[in-house]
Length: 318
Image 1 (tube, one colour):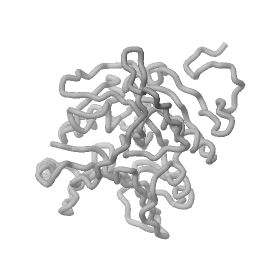
Image 2: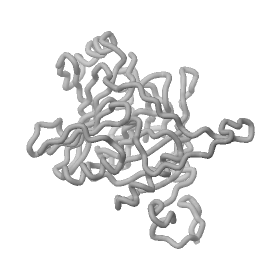
Image 3: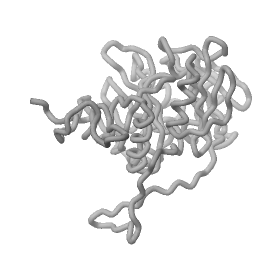
Image 4: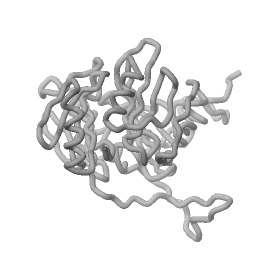
């Protein structure tokens, strides 16, 4: 089944004013605006919907407060949608709207599938000079004043039962890339693609909820430039910039007024059918090879709230 990635996500939040300001600062384009609903787009046409749950009928929330209510996955063509329709018809929450087919995963998250409406986009990243390859000659590296996200890259949920949720998504064609055994599963929506489109994470209290939504940008420099811009706009960093050793991606996480956290990321591993899933034990240096706690202030370019002692988050404090 050719699932191509996330086409649309819907948040339920009553604070549309903050959402409007935040997602504009984040680099998305506002394409629809009403009293009860906002719609934004990434460069490739993936949509972010923020709607007031008090006035609009939305899928049920899996936690209190503003949070993600639905994930719509795009597929390659009508034949693939028909195949998924056959699988989903036997699962809980099935609803067929023709252009979209709906279900509910074991975590209670509303999901849907449609023929993808995302469009091709040209977004060239900065070429890199390494010891063995000189790809940038007589051209300076780009400095980004802000980010313009290319797509909604992945979503991460807290789930009470990782094996149950992992089996559900495997039935739909998702492939496991890596695991925290019994604690987490990184899954990509096709055998060939980026390291993960979905991460299922089980905490000791087995809570349900949104952890974060991630947006793909061109390269590490856009992660930095985007993060500095969002910081200058007054939004709070949760962690970053930093680098994940499991997916190899560079990241910067902020707190999202529409719910959970939100991430810029770039340079994740590209996988094929030859990839063999690995097992990891959770730990700070497994999550982040390095990371700056509290972020970099967009004006001073120094770490927020700390003296400039040259230490990273993962270094031991004395």
